[in-house]
Image 1: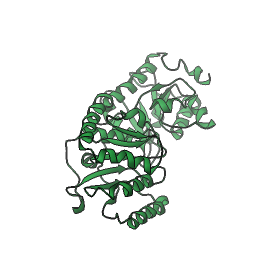
Image 2: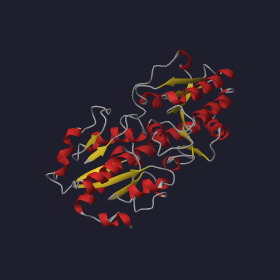
Image 3: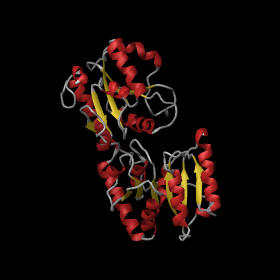
Image 4: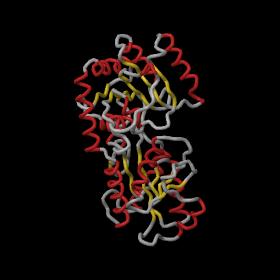
Length: 352
C-alpha cells in the first residue's frame, strides 16, 4: 500500500496521512512516498524504490496507490496504464464543489473512490463510499498538559480558533465576532493559533489593525503557529470554526475530542460532525453577526457549555475514533485485493 504525499506544506490531507499511516502500518504494509517532509513516525518509501513497483508484492496480487490529490492520481494512472505496474488506484475526495473536467477525467480512472462526507460525495459522478475522517482520541482528549499562558489569559475563559490566517479560513469573521461579544464579557478572551504565510501577511496586518482600533489588543490574541495544538484545544472553553470554504475540516473534531463545544459556519463536513444543539452549533451564514449570536449563548450559560462539552467528548469517542476510519479504509483495500464488486466493478467501469 502506497499513500503518496506530494505536497511540501502542511495541509489537511497531509495531516490525515500523518495521523493514519502510523496506525495503518500496524495492520498492513503501507508507506508514503514524496518529499521528505513527514514526521519520522510515518513510514516512507524512497524514490529509488520505484523500479520495485514492477514486481508484484509477495502476499497480494497488486499494490494499491491511494491518492488524495490530482497530482497524485495522475502518476498512479501513468504507472498502472502506461508503465504497466501491478497497481490499483484509490482516490479520496474531500472537495465541496463541482470538480473540473480534468479532475473528473482522473477520478473516472480510479478503481475505487472514497468521499470524506456525504456532502463531498454529492459532487462525485461515480460510485463511491463515504468514509469520514476520525481523530486520535489519545492525543486529543481533556487529559494532558496545558499550554503556557500569557499573564492576561490566566484565570479567564478562552474562545479559540485555529487555522491558517487567511480570508478563506474566515479569520476576519472570527475577529469581528469577538470584537462584538467580548466587549461586555470581561471574563472572556479570544485566542487564534495558526501560521500566516507571506501572501496573506497584509490580511493579517489588517486584522491586527482592526483589533487595535477596537481596543482589544490584550483580549484578542494571534499567537501564531504553535508546536502542538492539542494543549490549546484542551484549554479552550469554546471553539469557533469560521471558514468560508473547507474540504472536510478536522478542527471541530479535535476540539470536541478535547471536551470543547464548537460553533461553526456551514462549511466542510461540519454539519455532519456537530450534533446541533448538543455538541455545538452550526450557523447558516458566513457572518460575524451569526457567529457572535451563537457564541454568546455558550459564553453566558455555563451549564449549557458544560453539557455540550460532555456530549461532544462522548460523540467523538463513539463515532469518530481514528481506528474506525483506518478500519473502513482497510475494508476498501481488502475488497480490491479480493476482487469484490461493492463500489466499482472492474477497471473497465471507469469510463461508465
